[in-house]
Length: 114
Image (cartoon, rainbow, N blue to C red; front, side):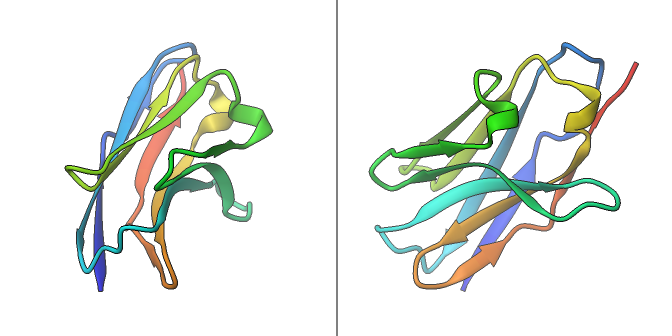
């Protein structure tokens, strides 16, 4: 089992920044991918960004140039730095961990509004 705990969500004005963190614990394999997905009301869950154990990153087109994903393997933690936030970034953000198994965090709300 892998347990994921997210933090860092909240309310921010358009143009502002937030940093999400997700700490993993449990039976973590060295070869894994960690990432962030989001789900807005009435919409399907979508990939925001992910990073492999080798540092290869993938971003949704809508966040390229604004969001940065990173990981600290010593802390089993993945981060999502979100800059230039827009109202359309409002969603519940979920941390994910994948090796041959898939795990999800409980989600953290991000609201971008003036």
